[in-house]
Every structure is written in structure tokens, then in C-alpha cells.
Length: 164
Image (cartoon, rainbow, N blue to C red; front, top):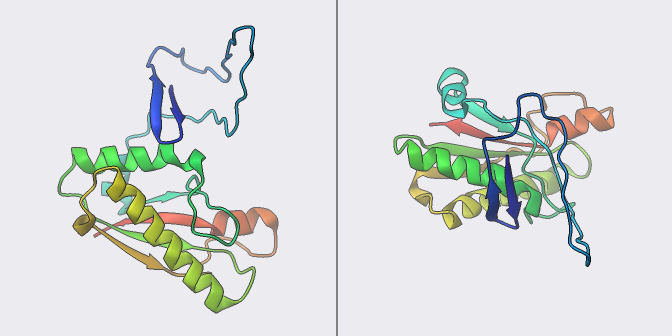
């Protein structure tokens, strides 16, 4: 398990038992406040997946509504991609931003471009060479699900790291 505060990893362990589906946080007498807590499965070989499928698709990089501001809970995924790229210097990506069809098409196009560029800037800030990355926004032009349901729209809002 790994824990982050903003973009800083404050805890990491491989000692969680297989099948663990919860954990506890103990506070001192003053208490603590926790936001944006997520328990996620790990262990998937992302590099092998990229080699096999040619891309890594994630819905775990999230943004403020109608903005290109990356939310703090997205840092785990950005750190994983940065670590992967540092471990595999031959890996280069086109970062593709995708939106749902809510709103005007031109606004979605601009938003998806700005979000892809924000992801690139985030990876560069984590030490990835910007020359290994490009950023392209596709707006709502490449849906992977229906835009008629909230779940479908959520699936269409994604970032794809496509191997070049």
C-alpha cells in the first residue's frame, strides 16, 4: 500500500495481506482529518500492458469541473507513470485527453487539450523529459461508451497514454 499527501509519498508497504479490502487509521487525542482517501488494487504490470495493448487508459486522473486543474487524488497515477517512464527510458507517450459530450464541442476540444497538457506538465514536474511526451486533446470525438448515462459519460472522461 502507498499513501500520499499531495504529491509526496508518506507511506509505502508490501505487507498488506492478500485480499485486504480495508485499513484503519489511528489518531492521537487531537484527531485527524482525511480527504480523498482511496483504496485501490495494485500489482498489475503496467509496462507489460502497454507493450501488449499499446496504451494505458486511466480514469484515475481527475480534474476540477470545466478546468484543467489536476485534482490531488490523481498524484498516485502520475507518480506511477513517471516511475514507469524512468524505469523504461525507451518509453514515449502521446497523452490523449478525452471528455464526455456535455457542453459545446469546441469548448470540450479546448478543455481536453488543456488537460492533456496539464498531465504532461505534471509528469515533467516529476522528472520525466518533456521530449518523451506529447499532448493531444480529442474532446468528445472518440467515445468508448454511451453519453446517455452518467456512468457512460464518466467512462468517456479519461486520459490515455498511447505508446509512440
